[in-house]
Image (tube, rainbow over all chains, first blue to last red; front, side, top):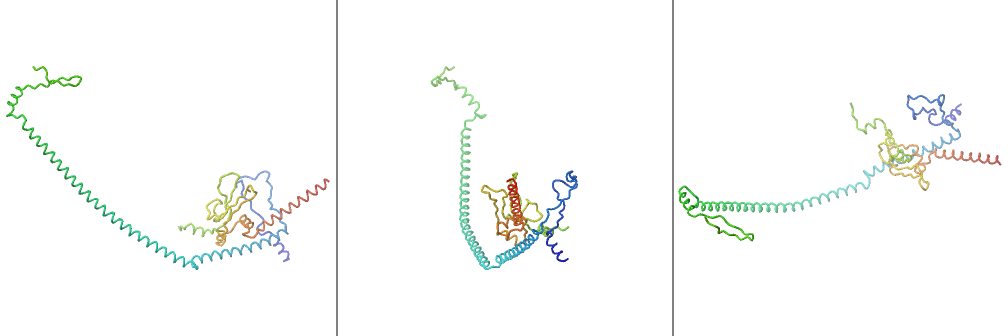
Length: 202
Length: 131
């Protein structure tokens, strides 16, 4: 009785035989096709000899796979450990710290150098600005003086002209003068450009 | 309402990492190309994966070879982290020599050999009957 049970268990395949209907092209609501009305799906028949051999093979395979998996797990853990607290880790940390220090030092030196350059540049710029300001002030002064001079010239000119103005006092005198000296504005021009001012006087 | 981050949600739903084949989206009809990929279990076949671990070209090339590539270092890492390879990936790895040969490969080969021998025997019988 027990041998029979054991053989049955040996011969039976590992997983469930009855597979549920898979959803292929049709959905839940589609009716069954006419050609498949009374069909009962049956999985392919199991060869008992082959089944026994297969079970053994699967047992071996699973054993080896399990061993491999544990080995890989151990390797992963070992690598992580070495990464964090291995022999090379301290040296790497030390090198990193040293490199960091060197770089910071280099940075500081660079900053100093650039600071010097910047100070010199700024000094030059301030001097330039002062110089330009002075020059501009001079320019403005000169322009003002020029302006004043021009205005004074104009005033002098006006004053001179004012001597020849016709006022109420000079009115009679000037009229008399003009009437005494008739001025002739007529002239003639030739095609060659010869100007003739002497014309027939009335 | 408790809001969890995606990682915590995945832990809660109990997903695990699988090493499987995903179709590379080349969008050419009748020309498949697979990527061997470490992805979470519930993800779509061609969806977001964690890392690509190799390729598999199912159509043979001009020298009648089917090309497969594996990143063995990363595959070791993922299996060490608890990933499960699927059946076709396990078969390919077995053929490559990284895993032991899968039992179904051997069984299929035996079955085919038996079939071939049977058809040969029948052909011989038919020839003898004709003669």
